[in-house]
Length: 477
Image (cartoon, rainbow, N blue to C red; front, side, top):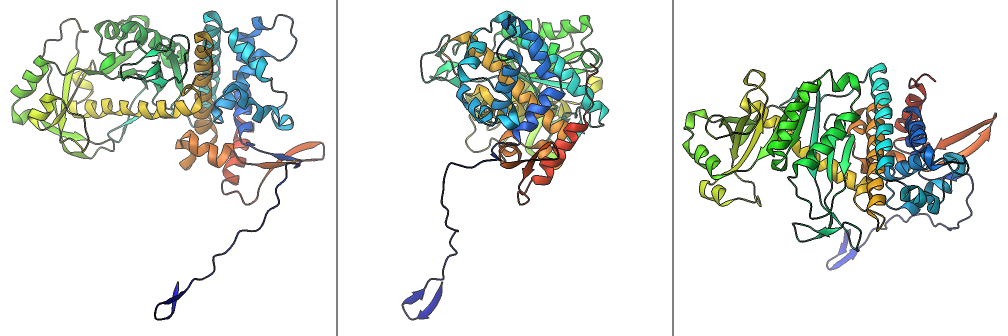
């Protein structure tokens, strides 16, 4: 804007966009072309073949669509950001790229035929594909990344369990009022902190208890069966949960797994009871030590202390330690009456990591890393289990299992095919930059070519991912 004379202004011209004439008669153009990367990765990790074997009994006459391929296409659709079974149309209507894709009624029938025995076979199929994906990661030199705490790599694997609320806006089987006054489901899920893979999940009514030991045991056991034998019996496995996972029966189960050759440890939240409050008040000033940030630096205004021996932990596994952190509350923090009296926010957790394997400061920041499960859940809700399609509980349980498969595909894409910023990107960013890209199909020299625009900012990253996919070692046979 420039001044011409006192009280008058001249507005400079704003560049206009070129005029477009829009029609729906394009040919040779493909949308969501990057989703082909997910479909091919499902084949390369043998997920498609494993699903096909698992679901073969649902196709007795070997006619029509292979149920395993239908399940894979549903997982690819969810990984690509689809929200409803009808969104399969994005793949189905681009048959030159994605091949034959089942109709919406066919996909519905598959889900309707999925009972508990079929779900168990789907879980087994995912475990087979995971073993292949982890072997591919090892052979290509990337390997399964380590989880981090205080700027250090954690040895072994870290499993994070947590429950979340899913709102239903209509009456669905097993949906119920939730403890927060809503209505819907209360699934319990487990993620691998190392990669973000969705290891297991259990769909539950909205009024299911957050601290139900039996559900925690089931979800943990299903997660452990997803880990290949070499890692399940060969490395340390840390199990993290909030205070809902502090049930004595659950922690006893975690400890008992060691008798079966699974080297599990736990780190779980613990309620601040009156004995805990008395112990905190009795701590001398000199036993408090500065807390740490995730990068290993000192955490301003936060301190950690050991309460072991000051609180009765009778009934918990031998060697259980109890540790407390206190810090100045951030604006908007929810404080208990005890916190308000003390002027500090307190959090307590239990762990059976021995004294020789970590200071209270390190173990506290390691436990605080459990908060990343909330990010995994948030991303999982955009990858299928944020909404459930059916009135029937069994169909929605199958939907959850396919959502976990979709989460796996995204995690394996990051580990096996991407690097740099994209190797740590959330699904939303991957969809915007890679999966939803448009491309042009051409034929020549007996080849079908997918041509990504030369002006697309992330064209090189996507092409490199396809090349890495083609170079992945395949299972024999």
